[in-house]
Structure formats: structure tokens, C-alpha cells
Image (tube, rainbow, N blue to C red; front, side, top):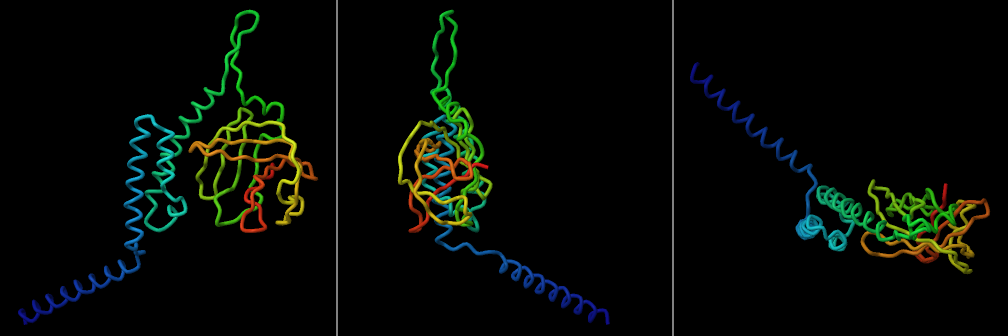
Length: 246
């Protein structure tokens, strides 16, 4: 009887072991699998991140951001890219902080008054002439497949674009009077994608931290809100970017 008990114990242990392996296999099968193509892309992006980090640490912030342009942002939302996404936006945020500080410093000129005192003037103080175009804007043509959510323009020309995935882009803007008709936008008073031609009152040039320059044309809608449009076509009859101040 004692020998039979030992044998039964061994069989029970073996059965438990096999069952445990089966459960583990089942658990592993539930994990999302990363294709070889995706793994190759992850390895490629890891190299880009490494190079961008090195440039950031050596103070080459603009070059670091340009290196990050080698990463397709849409890929970062895919399975397996989570840690890369975190590093990407941490690096970009660090680069942007230093670049914006440098841009603001360069946008300041020093003049002397009759008493010999010095006063700092920002070339972006042109926004004080057009205060209605500073403030918070909302992306009008919302699309879940696009990043744009909110646009914030401060009186000193600092621009922040808040995105739907919690990230943000940063830049510095200048504004000037501008009169041109026939610029494409939406009739934002209708809440639809009905397009219209507008007469621009101002032009706003935004230099983003990656060096790219984007131009918006500002005007006032029929209901009195400030509106920005880049006037570009998107998916045929749509407008690429339209922002409404709220």
C-alpha cells in the first residue's frame, strides 16, 4: 500500500506539472505577438532614440529633434512600441524646453532710453497689437485618426499644440497684418464641414521646435470668434487645419 501511495503521489505531481505547463502556454498564447517586421522597426527606432538622446545630452537640441523625425509617430501607438513612445516624447519635451528658451532670448532686442537704461523688447510683442488672436483654440475638424486637439497661443508668441494622445508640440510664432481673399476654411458657425472662402486679417507663422514652419491665416467668424486656417486641402474637399478660439 505504501508503494502504491508513492506512485499515486508521483502521478499527481506529474499531472499538476503538465497542467501548469498547459496553463502557461495558454497564457502565453493570449499575449499579443509582435511580427518580425514590427520587431525590425522597433530595433531601427531604438537606434534613432539612442542617437537623439546622445545629441540631447551634448546640447544639440535642434539636431536631436531632427533625428527624432526619423520615427513615424503613428507607429508609436502600435503594440510593442510603448517604451519607445515614452522615450520619444520625453526627449522631444526636453529638446523643446531648451529650444524655446533660446528662441525667446533671440527674439529679444535691447534698446536704450534717454536715461541710458535698457529695456528688453520681444519681437513677438506684435501679438499685443492683435490680442484677439491669442488664447485657446480647439481643433474644428476633429478626426479620431488625427492628433490635433487644442492650440494655445500666448502673448509672447509661445505656441503649444495639445494632442489627443496626451502629447504636445511646441513652437514660437509671429503675427502680422495680412489681407488676402479666397483662402479656404470651414463655415464654423454651422458645426459642419461646409467649406467657404474667407478674407484673412492676419498671418501667423509658427516655427516648431523641429525647425518646420507652419502658416495660419486668421479672421473673425460671423459669430465673433477668432478662427485660424492653414488653407490647405485635406482628403479632397476638406480643409487640413482649422482652429476656433473658445
